Length: 80
Image (cartoon, rainbow, N blue to C red; front, side):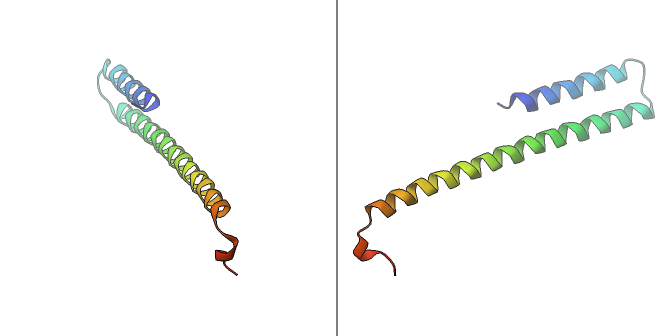
């Protein structure tokens, strides 16, 4: 469960609810659209950051595996 994403969803819904208390007008639609954009950009940023971290971890693990294979290799089989 992504806590930040859940928080953004709850925050957006509470703002929408607050805007609807005094009736509905065009300003409410603009505010809701702005909140939706902010929420989606925040979630996209988190997803990108998470993907970058995963890629970094993958490369680090692959590098460690590569170092182990090089150390175990017989020098006679080494490429020239």
